[in-house]
Amino acid sequence: MNVSSYLLGILAALLILIVVVEMLRRHQLRERHATWWLFAGVLALIVGIFPASLVGAAKLLGVELPVNLVFFVALIILFLVCLQQSSELTSLEAKTRTLVEQSALQDLRIRALEDAASKRALPPVDPDDSAR
Image (tube, one colour):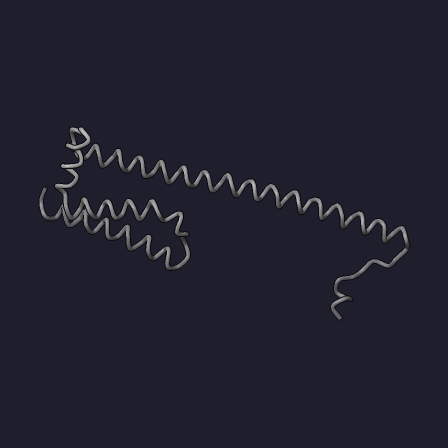
């Protein structure tokens, strides 16, 4: 590998880390969602600075080509990100369903109260009048 390839790898890893940290700083990304991206950025930076560590890890794990290890680790990280997002989506769907049910029940209660009030011949309450 030549020097420009090493520099490109290091710059790409630094760019990933800078973007993730900046998104965290601007509250565009929550900490629990940034964990895997920070892990991937740090891992890419280590491999970019010490490329022999990738070769050593590949040999240690019995992977013939170090680039295959990179693809495998990237696939695992992306799988974990998708799993985390799916878990978050499931939780949000359950919360949304609960909120919709609560809203529907409140709407029914309001209608029942309005029907009861109209049967007693009470004038309807105008929200604007109560503010004056």
